[in-house]
Length: 224
Image 1 (cartoon, rainbow, N blue to C red):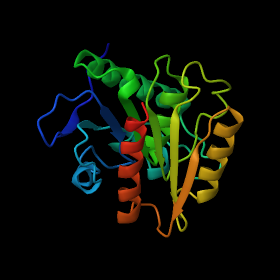
Image 2: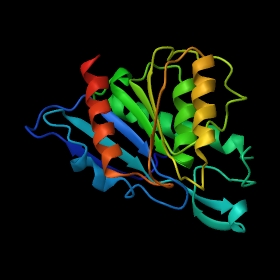
Image 3: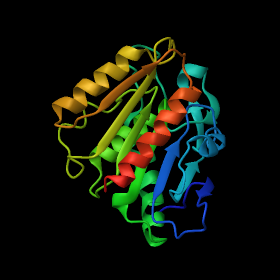
Image 4: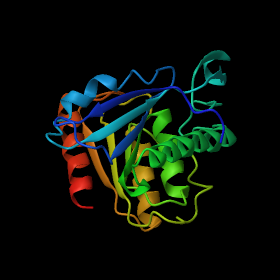
């Protein structure tokens, strides 16, 4: 195992319960693990005890930004609908997330209680991680993102029944909503039953969506 990514960790445990559930949440291009940290108290999780892990992406040169070095899960080579990306780096970032999964398992969280979430770039890595993982996972939360490695994923080794929620903004001009629709169609063809929800927003999250995500997280864990 390589050195673990630095992470922001937030434990939601109102009554100091033992935590056996975790959400690993990946930020977007140029952001950090602090990006989604403030949403935890807004999710409305009630008495549910969950550990949130928000990893910081490595800093690498990003081609579409003139080679500028910034936090990124992979290099974006072209800003087209086809989203030409560095697939090898997506796979490497997925391996980093597997290391974080291993660490949570060591801390007493079974893989079946781990949700992988990601926004934009982070969502592309989340797709790849969950759909190629050899361990059973609880859920996949894909926010304003796209399935960058759809051509590489032709079958699902383990997570045939994983809960999948796909959210997108109607006015997203960074990752057009059509890419979310394409991801839903690909996952459906792979035998999954993803939900797809849009909100009147751009490339971002909104409060109504955050509340809906909180209810989804509670539902995923109560159904297990």
